[in-house]
Image 1 (cartoon, one colour):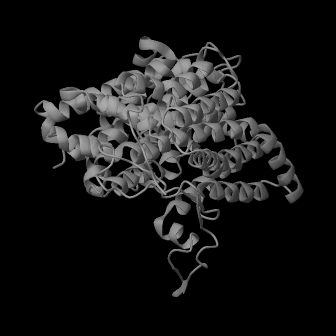
Image 2: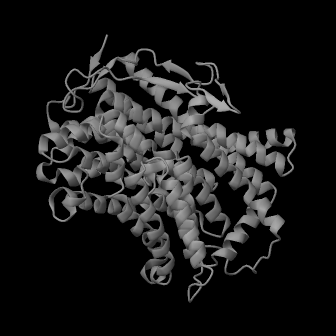
Image 3: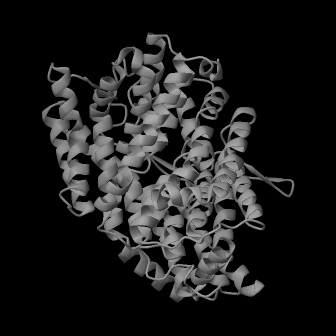
Length: 563
């Protein structure tokens, strides 16, 4: 038996839209203004979403329960699995004093905190976004920044702001690949179009993040570093996305950006070293540390190991092998893992193939929505992080018993974060399967000639709701294509705009904020982080909307659109 979504359940478009927005308004309002603990706010928002799905959208009770469980499970795996193991690796380095050496080496390479935030939050974070995604870059960079003397709010907020332009090509191009899968549009065309939008923001973000930290004058003091990091990221981002595809865009661009910035710092430093006003002991105030080559290798070993594991784990050939989907050639011999053992697909009872999306969100006679929980325990990014942590732990002298003890302490530390993420994803899945998300999307889509602008903001809304550019593309990709075709605008443009606009919502989604607060041991201050980044998110999303509008309507920007 199937159930069809309806996107104006009250018969009044304005009332339906306001009701559909209620779970998000309650969630963000509880965090930012009522100062309710974030895990409680997540479950409060979920309660509103459940009431809306049952009482307004008339979704079957069993399907609502299935969506809730499906979302919560996805929150714990793979997302919670990533966070748990990443914090475990971080704890291992802290307890051996390696993080202090890492902090000192970065401080000596880039003694000015303004340059540090460009190098670490933007360039270094983009590598982790490209290799892993799903909150990994925010967790790593915010932890490093706080160890360099940044205040917790700065460390979290600046990491979130910097993690924007790379997101559409994160996790080896997963958001663009997902967009291709749900829309049927050409993968390389989508990659190329996103690669003609995001480089503008790759140039802007290094300046923007320093401006958010140090103001206009502070930003002008390090403009060579911001320009170098931005250009050396934007140019490879454009070239790889347009002439190769979405897979290695962030990895190549981030390596180029880090290398160019390191080269600049060999012969240039800011005229005045800027001090961190909120820090009790800034890098500029500490005596310069001189480390031996062995100490530096040991300090960078965990992160080099993590990078290697993440990159290898993300290779399509190995991922297919680990999932039991395809063989892997080893020494001339083809090896294959048993199918259905390392990757287990679990259809969600009473939800899988039950919900039907209706026009204009989906084509006429669309197939029922799938709801399959994929437990790919071996190929998951979190598993790669766990293995990297264990290998690192052994190499730096931990015994098996000590590793287990640190893991247990880590689990206790992140327990509320895991509850929060489970609640957030449950909320997102209930709104998705009930159709409330589409009600909001249609409200933005019905904007006439301004659709290119508001359609871009639709991607921003999707990421803010789901916490994932991939999920936003899955959610609204089909709607973007259908609406673009109806209004005579390039579907490729609006499909890419959904992803490019979505990246600006990454800094305000509750999942990312919780990851940042957990990594910096600042859990409970999520409302402050949200207020810190909200303006930056909305302003950058508005600029993205303006760019897409120009590409849709105004020469010579129209010439940039992939046909």
